[in-house]
Each structure stands twice: as C-alpha cells, then as structure tokens.
Length: 329
Image 1: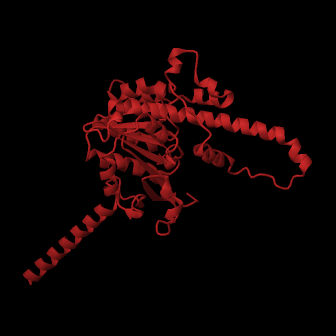
Image 2: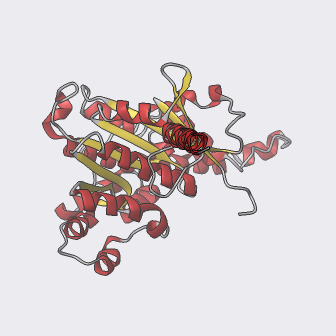
Image 3: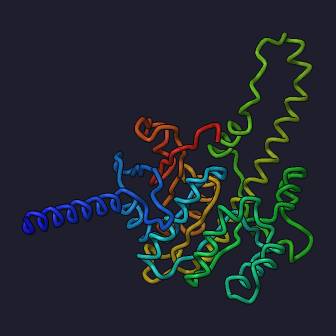
C-alpha cells in the first residue's frame, strides 16, 4: 500500500513538473504572470515563440519595440522583453520616445541615484501613463545599471514645426538646436502616404458635391494639404531626432556589422514610428547602414486564435499579438 502511494505521489510530481515546463515554454518570463500572446516571425512566415524571438533580438544592435500606447498587455510584454534580454546580454541601452532630449540630465541623475523619484518626475515631464506603463522599464534599467536615453525632440519644438514648417526645426539658440537632429530629411515618400492615410481616418471625403462647390473648396483643400505637410514635417523631426539619439548611443559600432561587445539599443516608441522599417527605423539604418536592426510590432487583437497574419506580417521582423481587453473595460 505504501509503495502504491509513493508511486502515485511520484507520478503527480512528474506531471506537475511537466505542467510548469510547458507553461514556461509558452509564456514570457514575467514575474507578474502569464500574458496571453502569440509571436509571429515574418521572415519564416510562421508562428514562433517568445524565447526564440528574444534569442534573435539579443544578437542585434538595435531593436525597435513598436507599441500601442493605451494597451496594458503591450506594456507588460515590453517589460518581459527587457527581462528576457537581461538573461542574455549585459550591455543594454533603453531608449524611449516618451522622454525628450532636454530631460536627459534628470534621467541620468535619477538612474545614478543622485535624484529622488519625486524630483525626477517633476523635472522629466513623464507621460500621464508613466507610473503603470513606463516606470517598470526605467526601474528595470536602474536596477541593472543600464543607460536610458531620452530620445525625442521636445514637444514644444515639434508643435512649432507643425505650425510653421521645417524652418522652425532650426532654433536660434545653440542649446535649443542640440535638442533637434542635425540632419533632417522629410521626403514625401511611402511613409508620407501612410501618414496621410492615418491622419485622414475619420474624415471621409464628400463625393456628392457639385462642380461649383468643389471649385469653391479648392483653396480650403490646399490649406488642408499644407497643414498636413507641416504635421508630417513635425513627425519627421521626431523620427530624425530619435534616430540620431539611437545612432549616438550605438557610436562607432553602427559602422560595423554585428559589432561584438557593443550595446544593444532597445527603443520603445509608438508602432507607427517603426512599422514597415519606416520612420525612425529607416533613419537609423541611414545613419548606421551596417547595424543589425530588428523591428518588433506589438498588435492587440480580439481573438488570438483567429489572426489574419497577412494583414500584419510586413510590419516588422516579429509581430507580437496580445489579447485586446474587452470594450467595456
């Protein structure tokens, strides 16, 4: 009887261990628990897993993590990415769109322990959702002794560009000029087309107007186009500044393929800035053409078991699908 009982307990322990192993294989390494997700590797045209993605990202020079700012699961995935990379690399730089260049001194002082969190938050102008969503990233960098980069241009400069055009990206003050990329290119290319489409959502054209009405609206349409281009210029200024910040963090390794011993720069930004390797991503590649750049796009979906991957796979090297919260939450 005792032998049978021992065998039963042993079998239960083995089954329990297999359950833990299976869960570890399917879920991000998160101290806060499992995050429903699926990982798609675009180059292989197949679903992969989180750990395999991390192993590949860890060999890169730059990794863009394109987020949906208002998705809680996305932010938990971002923390999981840093946790996974910490198990594979010691030299990681965390760069964020959410902090502007002029706040870098405050960020440095806080990471070094010379500034308390209250004073840091007062001077660094964090986004409203900093505490639940971005604080975990900054704190992870602080605990691991990693650098963090405030990559973006100050909002006041971007707003001025959106009102006045690209000329506003060259402030008179030398100190202000350092807050903007020294080289800015803003062609009306595929990125502009995507930008225009995104801006026009919710503003459908009126197709029932008469010829006279359309003629009367021609001037107004020209004004709209001019305003659109100014907003696009502001977008380019952000992209160029963030790209320059990343390239500066890379330093000389950006001129060498797969530099050994160099830093891996992980940049967190809105997905539009890096999807399709456009925006900030394309501008990093222009500055550091031999760097190994990976693009991850996090996409919330309503059903993880019914994903039309063809709709998303061109967005990045990896697409991480998260479960979108119910609409009533």
